Length: 261
Image (cartoon, one colour):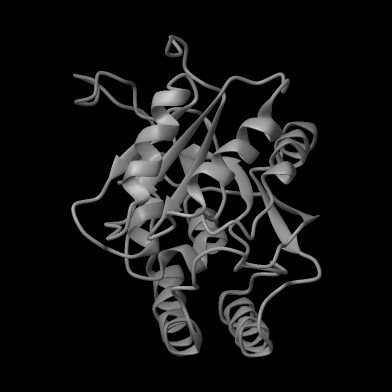
């Protein structure tokens, strides 16, 4: 039987050609969330996979439709687009993101969510300890992370860690562009996110599948995108509504006092 109530937690998992990881990662998420005090769903976003990933997702959803569902993109649009689609598809007020390659540990999800509710922070960002990546990937990640923080005045230790928990309101209408996921903390701040906390999380070696990203599509593109984010921070506007009269918003809801338009 499918859930009839709105879940409290939406786990968003973007995947692309991860046929060997779906069943295992799905089982790990189920095990991690077994017995938690929150209702939850897991939304899988397939980014135009060309292998049997979709078949794996269908089997997973058929086996547990109460917790798992998927969205299939028409073709490969990239990780940022898949993650953005997950944000728009999530039903819960709290979103947890996790990579679909198995390197993030689902066992960390309850810890992230517990910390989120304990601190009332807007965003809990994971910090990968003892990273199991190549030396080239580690170095490029550190360079890009330091440069992003310097240019955007952030202090986030590990922007590249996909394991994080946050309020969904801060990502519902963020701008979508290739590489958007590399700047989520900054984009969420522009959208009203006021407090960010960090906790260490586990990082595992990739045991199945192959990495889709290297130094050419991570480091150099990421560095160039940072200049765009710097410009966006300067030009960003979030009007605060003082009062309104007449008809309510088209959605039928009263506009939030800090609605972004």
